[in-house]
Image 1 (cartoon, rainbow, N blue to C red):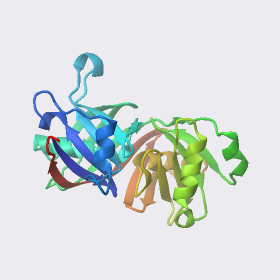
Image 2 (image 1 turned 90 degrees about the vertical axis):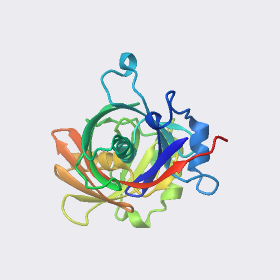
Image 3 (image 1 turned 30 degrees about the horizontal axis):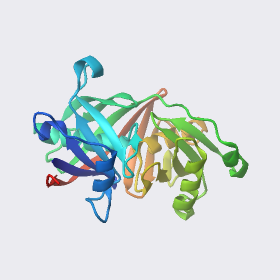
Length: 272
């Protein structure tokens, strides 16, 4: 099996493309994801993405199908950083430097634009993330302990956004894991503060199925959406995360995520 490793702002993914793995493609499941994403006994990553060949009858007119597995082997609907990594892997295999692709995900089809880049190691990529939807109801144990502003958002995957004074002092592993456990099916948790400059947010994240990560693309969009609804930011929001900076741009309620993808390595796995 051939795969590539990429990261979007330190949120790293292994990408397996059918087109690089023979006529019948690759066999990818949650067990393989958990094994390969292990940072001690595998390659190490926050998730594994299978870029499958589309079936025109099932998938419609798309270029690629995204199957996303978290580091623990569970299935995820969508990842803003992950879809950029998948798209970078695809254009590398096509040997092109810019492209517009339509990618089918478990959260729907996303339009992805790879902006022209002189080499394959780094690319800036824009993702049409659609219109955020209201999230799930807040469970009673969460409502009882929370203070200040908080809310849920559905970006194709579920998010809880918590406004705090300083995300850098939050015990993300402890608080994030507890909050996730209160929601049936789990949830991604973003701890966010306004600043350091106008129309900017600082964010730290607990990701469902992966734990503390350096960045979360859908989380950046969820946080910007609620912060904008609360009157804290405008239509173009810079989101600072431990792994780096992404931009979230609003056209009405429509959201575009802009950020980098970096190629780390190309890997050949043995048969067993």
